[in-house]
Image 1 (cartoon, rainbow, N blue to C red):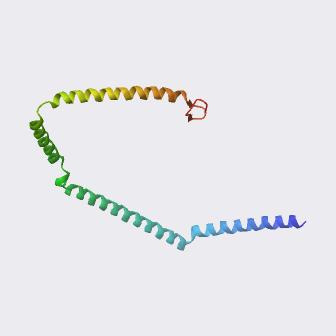
Image 2 (image 1 turned 90 degrees about the vertical axis):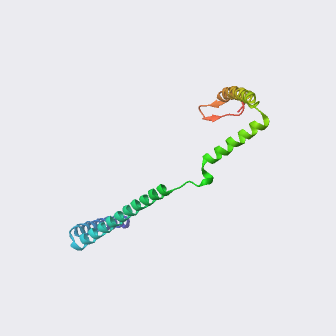
Image 3 (image 1 turned 45 degrees about the vertical axis):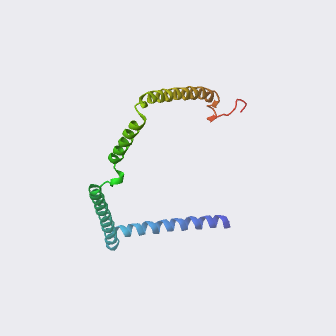
Length: 146
């Protein structure tokens, strides 16, 4: 009997609280003070958003102005470095002669052969790796026993 009474009291309390909440919501909709406060808060939020937008716009203009005024430092220019490099190359050519052309061809050929060797090794390794991949587990296995 006590359990039933307790259930009934809880149910009545919940209904009463819900009724009070509905009444408060109804009054808030129609209360001029609440409406005025809500309008004031909305205006403040709009003002904050406008100020933030203006600040962001000013920052963009400031960054653009700085970008226009930017001047590259003399030590950063590549033209000076390129000129120095060409002078050094000319100096070395005078000292050591024109034998560099044959050396360049040999170096390029050695580089090409090295690249081809690496590619063939990678292809063999890729074939081995594909053999040790388990699609069910989505794992790459190190040995066949694994």
